[in-house]
Length: 337
Ligand SMILES: O=C(O)CCC(=O)C(=O)O
Ligand SMILES: [Fe+2]
Image 1 (tube, protein in one colour):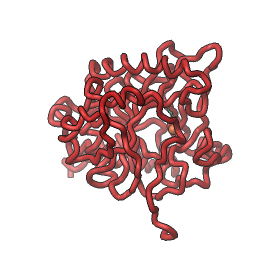
Image 2 (cartoon, rainbow, N blue to C red):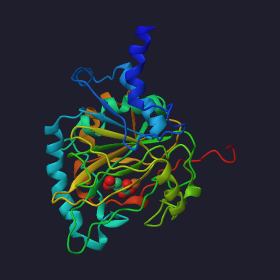
Image 3 (cartoon, rainbow, N blue to C red):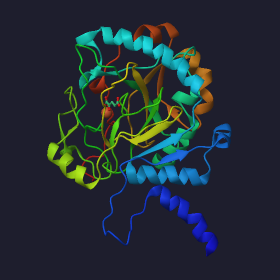
């Protein structure tokens, strides 16, 4: 009995307590669960069952979990240097820049070539262990991009995105897609850590939304629903330490926030779809990455179109933004439920 108590208490406190003697309806926390990953887990590329349980249950309950201390800082710095240069190029396009909702937040792809590729960032195996625990074996990776929060300028004052869902279409009511976000720097309220509304994924529906897929500002959550949810479980902007990755249910309500610092905050976004969810997107990848990606493919279906490196380098800064991507699936079940 004593052993049982010792073993269960830390996990229960990590997940937060539902029951309390003082209040019949205590609020669940606004801040996400953070799994502190050990050096041993990073070295073996495997979470312990206990940490996998914590991450899996956090995603089911909250729609989001943070895995901390999983990526070497030097690897993040290398890619950040390149992506900060690229952000300036995109920003200079002004009205034609690939911005989402407002010009302070741009869609930005990493160059998918051997020169810039880092497996622990793009196809992190600990992230895949968690996504396959929730979605089923060999999730489909068919989207590799990023969101960059730009420092304010004279022409783009600090602005928040509307609270929205990235699943702006009729979607399943069970987990079907998880976004693996990798911030290249520490994320805080100062530089625009994403605002998250934990727990909103479970009852999410397109009926909650305004702005259809195809409109620039699609997927916006209706104001009266936000007001109501604010009372039940208010949002937060968590501090996410450098070296962490954030795994978020695609249905979760969230918003990009202004970056008040002087440095662009780049956050990569890789989407893992459930293997049964027949998303048809393809990522354009240089063929020099074919042998490097191979070892990852036993755990992850990488839906890639392989092209010469020059084609990637000529095209990766000319892709679409938000609505250019289709997160829905081919031939969805019709009229079943
Ligand atoms: O940059 C962020 O923090 C979030 C951006 C976002 O949610 C979006 O553009 O859809
Ligand atoms: Fe979003």
